[in-house]
Image (cartoon, rainbow, N blue to C red; front, side, top):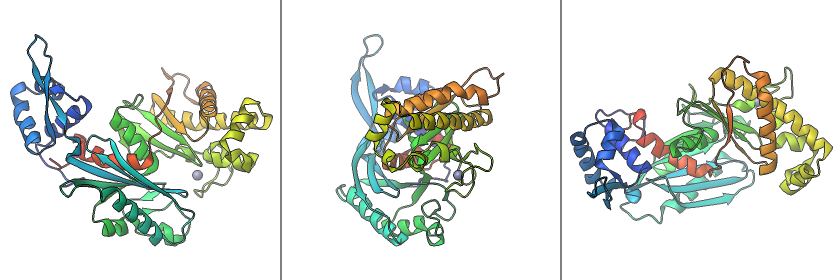
Length: 387
Ligand SMILES: [Zn+2]
């Protein structure tokens, strides 16, 4: 079974059918034909093929329009699985996801800073074995996704953002992992993986043009263009955290200066106001008591956010800012509300609309890494050769 970058003619409608059956369990053949935009007779061989291959089954009688029962179709979720791997400076994680995109199992280990990338491979391989070993022999693992902090080098399979050391930046992580677990690995930036999952799940705000932003220790992002993930030429698109908000500003971990994340992230907060701010309870207490330093910091952070997101909006013609993050909810909401109030200052005034700010869903990164494979495999636009 091929996963990506291979084309097969004639499979487009099968993949489309599979997508609709996944999204609308119990859908009738007639409704499926309408959704795909083909005739009822034309849908018959598609359904037969998918059933013969074990991807779908009939789900019993559904009440029909005129009292006639019609037989529904549903996905056979345990037909196959995908595995997602994720790591950052604190935690290593693996997730097992079924064909329907549901989480079946996950494992994680907390690891401090590790000294050599071989250890990384060792730990991720162990987690992969942990989640796949309970699977029965006939269960098929379609693919493995790896979500990592950017920037990434997909061509060489390197995760360049984990450590500034050359030994790490140039380590062929994907190749080493593929050798150990015997599967092709789909490497993706963390935040593109999370946004991909939102697109795939059909979440609110992902249908047209959106800027996805995650305010964590740094600030990550992704771009959704015409309802699809826009990855860019080296798969590093969407780094909204590294939009410049101050000429000759603060030096950034990325090597540039004045990047937005140096004024908005958790790391910036702790660096500006002290290590006690790393404790969410202390942070929340300060917010509720209207601590003057914190209020001032949030005020400036909101302006930096508005400036960067306004710039990105002008560039992308975005209709949505999809946000999520590590800050306690009250603070994140306050920050984004203030940024939304200020964004018109930085967006072309004659634009017909301003982007809507929508709270995104916090998905587990390893789950997103796993669904990447399903998305890549089952998305007709990717020319997958799965079926
Ligand atoms: Zn930067």
